Length: 345
Image 1 (cartoon, rainbow, N blue to C red):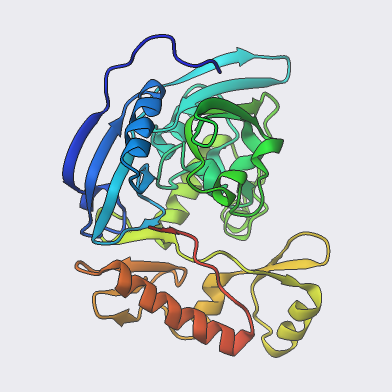
Image 2 (spheres, rainbow, N blue to C red):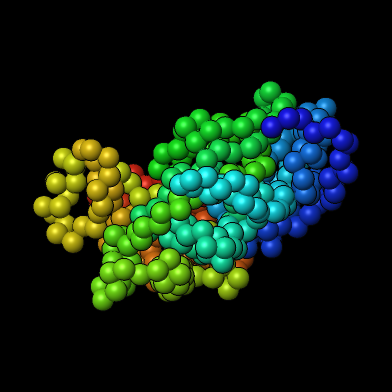
């Protein structure tokens, strides 16, 4: 991607901007300097200003996977780059270019409306398209990494726009090159490669159970099933603050899994890499008695132990305090460490 040729309109700057409606936990935070990024061309100028003043900075998309402090010092870049279009139709695949600020669920809905199935298992995940590859979001047996062709981003280190291929993104479970190198890349566009040969993916337990009597569902039926399951398990952030799944599912060696299975016959797990087994973090937390429990203004959701919630006036400190209690007890009971999934600002 070449550098922009025309001087862009400057990004809107707001001081002391409240961010309670820009994070799904509903934390009462504010940004000292908030830049509204509506186009990629605005980024070099903003980053130049930040560098000249030696300001701390961070990116905020949909705020669905973050834990915010009361004050975000320095600069916060609010990514609002929109737009989605089919940019190529090859023999076997369709390429779709999507702006980083596009709402993820709305994009998944758009793909089905345009007869481009493949992402339906990832329906109703909160957040933006630009944030999705950083965490390599996944659900119900599907990861976004399997559908990304390449990513366009601004490389802060090189002060230039770059394109990273799928392999260069170094995707792994809830991980990527972007996550490994924070503060280096600002994602501007994601280009998806969707196969024209669609195959239903319903092997994940919840979906397999849902489609017991319908082994060949359509993409639309899977989409609706995922929305139904997620709505039952996960609270609506507009009703009660949360960031979805709070802990990653831990991956352990088969030997440790076999030892745990002898002690806990109901241990919920899934196959992973050779010699590895992925445990259901929600099950581990539930066994420790946390589901539905409250600690002051924060707590654990009553229908899904993997979700931490803000009952109204919780702070980042409250959430992290509860998270530590959970981590300590799970480690003591199972000998397994839980890693926090949201980014802590």
